[in-house]
Length: 212
Image 1 (tube, helix red, strand yellow):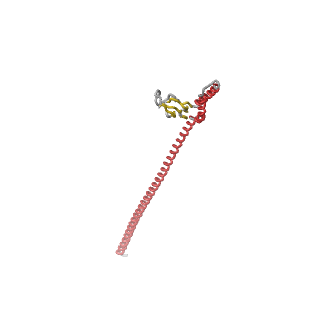
Image 2: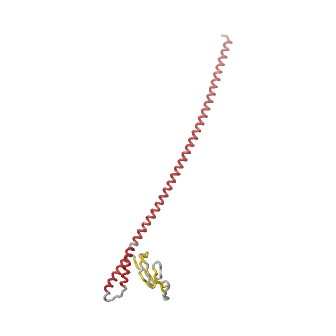
Image 3: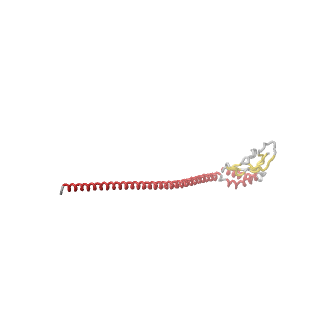
């Protein structure tokens, strides 16, 4: 092989080597571009996924808040119902206690209402003229009358004061009026039927004659 042939062969080899390097560089550049594109796509996918997760999380929070608000509203209504029931129960309890106290306080009223007509009859009987023949009977009637009045008094039932007192419509029932200049106006001058009071409750007002 001549020198010229050898030189041509070397030049040909150098060209091949250069072509290989160029091909390798091109391949590397293509691969780099491909990797950059893949990375970009991956980043976009991640951003899209992240946004989707955030949106789902936001919707979940809104739904949970709505559910919480609904439960709170239900709890508030239940609490208000319980307060009303408690108030109604307290009122019922107080009313029951008042009724029990009133029942104990005025338990003798029914008995008094039954006995007052009998007392009226006793008083009429005692108002008759006493004679030697009726003296014993009148004394017996008087004793029974006093015993009944004492029994009623022990239960808190007493006579309402009338004669000489100023007329009080809460205690007295005026059935007659007269004019007497010697007596003050609106004062009671005669009692026609006794009245009775049970502690602080009038069970029968006194029937009276009042001066104008």
